[in-house]
Length: 163
Image 1: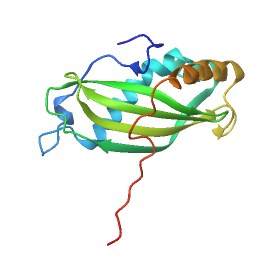
Image 2: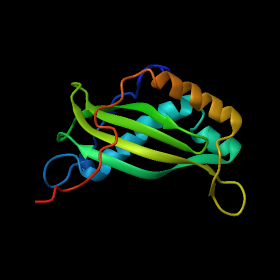
Image 3: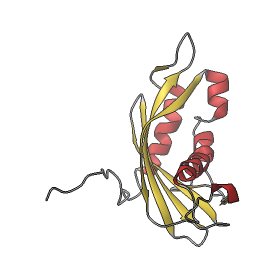
């Protein structure tokens, strides 16, 4: 695992579990999401959005939208890592681009997601601005990530050309 300030953030290696392999003999699509989710934990912890944030502040993030591109099959017994780059931020939203890589460094998938700042205090969770101290930490990371090249697959949509 790289330093939380490394650009882009890189998770530690994660093992693909045997029960995640589908009848086609490769990683089932649901577990790409699991790996992306586990792969961002270190970044979120380092910028103040992890479990401690939820437990101590009563705030968290919810994913509002996600788009996965499957680039290459992940085989059984593989080890993978995830890179995460903040590509957008405002007072209530966080736009992240992630890549899932095999331990041999080839890209297996990408995930682009939009997360919302959620205040869980009170009767029901609601979208709310990030607390000021949290927003300052996330903004600093976003500013550092803004120095990186924009990911090639950023902003893709699904569609079928008309014939």
